[in-house]
Length: 130
Image (tube, rainbow, N blue to C red):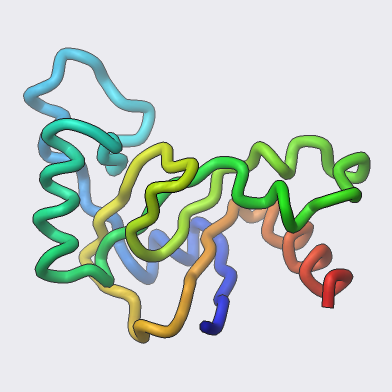
């Protein structure tokens, strides 16, 4: 599987996340109106879309970079806790899901989405691991 790393602004522009229409029926507000919760009505809706168009589902995860960062945690102590968006449906360390209007182009590609500040650090760590 090939891994492609992009910035959050590039992801937003290319894949266009949809707004969580289920938020209107909830009393609490979300910090991200595009995020679908990993339980209840939100999760049921994510599953519904996944069954038809799995390339449009993205998972927000935490602790994804812990293994990559390994012994270099002193250099970037917050990197291990950074939230990352991954293409596809994942359950491990999930925070929530996004649905986009544009799907992932190829099934054999994992797209990792980072903030513009974190992306260069991740690319550096990957080069050092190689």
